[in-house]
Length: 100
Image (tube, rainbow, N blue to C red; front, side, top):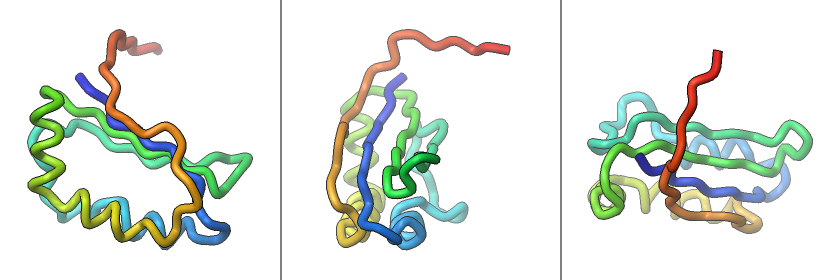
C-alpha cells in the first residue's frame, strides 16, 4: 500500500477555491487502486492544507493512473491558490494499525 501526500501553504483566503479546483467530485471515476482520499486543514493555520490518499498497487500503477486521469489538470488548476509546497511524495506504508 502506498500513500501519496502533499503539504501546501495556500494564499490567504483561497481555501474554498483550492478545494473546489482540487478535490474530485463524487461523480468522477476514480482510477483503479485508489482506496481513500483525505483533505485536511490545519485548525491553527487555515492556510495549511494536507492532501493524501491510499493506493493499493505499485508505484508504476499509481503514476500511470495519474497520467491517464485528470490529476494533472486538477493540480494545475490549483497553482494560483498556492503560496508554497512542503513535503510532496509517495510513501510506502510500512505498518498499519487499527485502534479502537
